Amino acid sequence: MKTQFMETVKSRNMLLAMLLAGSALFNPLLAHAAEKTEAATTIPATSEAIWQSINEKTEQLAAVIQAGKLDDVHLHAFAIRDLVAGLSSRSGNMPTEKLTQIKANTKFVATLAARLDTAGDAKDKVATEANFQKLKDVLKTIRANYSSSAKK
Image (cartoon, rainbow, N blue to C red; front, top):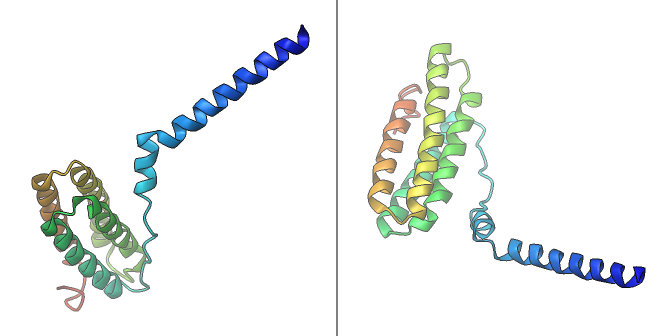
């Protein structure tokens, strides 16, 4: 009788394990997270090189939005976010007040990247375009803190 009880417990545990494994495989939230895995953004060594990369990614993001490929918006938005985050550590002897402003704007760039991702996933082109314009405005504000050679 004890053996029969143990077999029943083992089979129930096996069934539970299979159900949990199956739910993890077919969970749309996990699938969405796996879909959003992107390659790590390489941060260039100088602020000038970072701005060049930001310009390239901004142009690519504009092309993706224009083409209506809103599922790809997050790739470029998050790359821009990461590049902007790398600016403060590569800004040399920038005055403290400018560096503080850059760091504050860096947080807003991260917020806008998340908004772009959300709007893109929702296939909301109007919201995507609006947040992209805000992102370009913030990038312009950040860029104003750098020398004329780094401006576009």
